[in-house]
Image: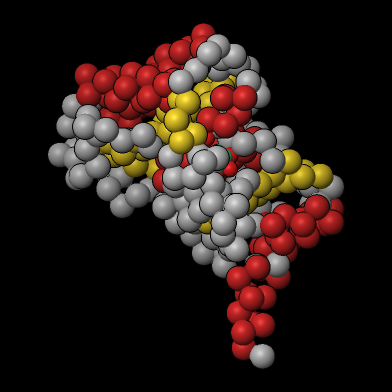
Length: 281
Ligand code: IPD
Ligand code: CA
Ligand code: CA
């Protein structure tokens, strides 16, 4: 059982650090950037990703020095082992780096605190350009600023605005989400690819989107947003309908009402399944 005061202290720290990192992003938005590539030529990291991560990690070390930290850009300062306190921070210092690098105004800071088992207890996602701060504390609801969030009431996928994304190996991998995306275009009212998984999840929580799914994400992409959706009354799962893995390997999120319809489209259009069927014949 986690202590409520401990969690509230970490929520306060996460919110403060997300706002500070967001201020760096706001200042450097549309400025000249040093940009490097990571796993693929389309997987970018900028000096701003690194500066935001350093600020957040330093802030956690100062306030909660015994907690463990998993941060996307890594580095000597990051410890991903067991914390003395049982808490682990999971940080995406800039979610939406490709957008940021192109001056497309959709990116955020995502910070979560997990229990040892990988269950998110605190989630903060901050959009610096809109000055929108999404927060959640497990069992206490999700908020945008002070306002409690609730998912939409869309009853059918045909009435739904849905979002997705594509992983950085999309140029080379067959597990590319394209057949699922194609069928969703034909089924949902509308579909978006906005380039920030954490904000997509928060938009499901806020009822701006009715569903969002993606494959091959990482823990830092989903740790905060998943909690925010669940605390807003939404559902998250894997494609089989079981719990969404903390690894981010697959996540389907929705207002709950349309969840089975979304899962049915994803299952029926899995490019790997049709390939396996061809091989079987
Ligand atoms: C990416 C964004 C994007 C999603 C990618 C993620 P990054 O995170 O969330 O929306 O489609 O799969 O990797 O690299 O900008 O932190
Ligand atoms: Ca990310
Ligand atoms: Ca990132």
